[in-house]
Length: 110
Length: 113
Image (cartoon, rainbow over all chains, first blue to last red; front, top):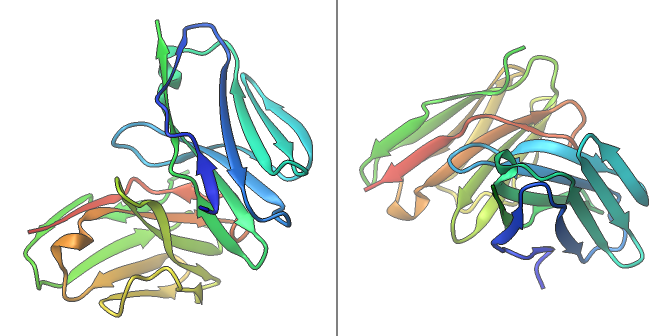
């Protein structure tokens, strides 16, 4: 089992819809979770981070953390074509080990 | 504010040659990270420094790779000798708070022929 698992996609949603991206992890003691967006040929860009159970909202983005089930989600409301990118989940494990998932490719169809 | 700066942006070299990648972190950040990204393996953390000191180099693939951070504003990743399987995009990232919110540079695309 990989440390951080993501569905590689591609995930396609129509413009204006909600895009839901998921990430599971295997270290129950993990405390810190991050979402990065990477456009093709560009570097990863930090868009959200969450440290505690529940939801964190920032504009059209919401990160949801469920520690009991060991997953973290990213919801993108009112999806725009400019949101088309690969979304990388990253988790800070206990023992200061940091892992990225392989990413989910999102395409927003106009 | 300037972000993380990396040079060169592209590097093409022949197998066996030495390659040096350079990074300037964001001013005020005390942690610096080197990553490698390939289609096959995704984004891998190679090494990270905290206050110029290497903390974890367990991701460095082999002895051909070495990294230094002589001061708070400069780091290098060296590959000697380079091999075709080293071809990848190498990213440098920095943060204010260790292995948390990291900000990436534009990357160096390395091609070893």
